[in-house]
Image (cartoon, rainbow, N blue to C red; front, top):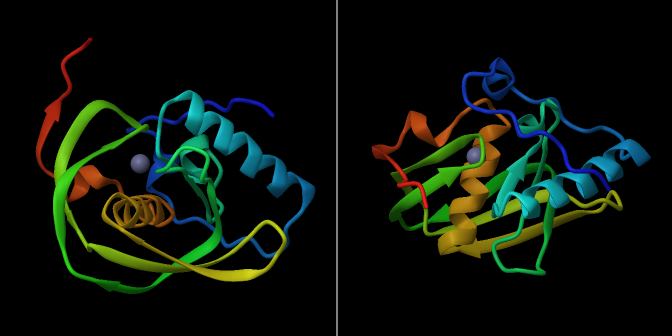
Length: 154
Ligand code: ZN
C-alpha cells in the first residue's frame, strides 16, 4: 500500500465529474487500498478518488474505526429526514462549516468483488455518504456550507 497525495481546494481536479468504473482491475483494488491508507493517515472519515487526483467514481469511508466501507460507482437511492452539523474536508484543510444533510441515506454501490450491494447510514455516516458522493460530481461542501470557520491551530 502507498500513501497518496491529497489534492487541495483550488485544484481543478476537484471540480470535475468522475467517470464510472466499468471493470474492477488490480489497479482499482490497489487504489482502494491506497485510498484507505491515505484516509487513515490523514485522520479522515472519508475520501473520494478525485481527492487523490483520480477521476473515477470511488469512495472510501470509515466513520467507525475498523469498519471500512468501499464504494464503487455509488448512488444515493433513498434519503429521509434532515440534520444540521459541522463538516470538514481533507481537501479544505483547517476549516469547518455548517451543512444541512439528510439524517438517513441509503446508497447502492459495487464492492471490490464486482457485487452490487446496498448500505444505509444515519447521522455521521449519512453525512459522509453525501459529502463523499458530492466529490464525484465536482462538488465541495464549502459550496453549500454556512459559517465557514478556520479551526484554531493546536
Ligand atoms: Zn471532502
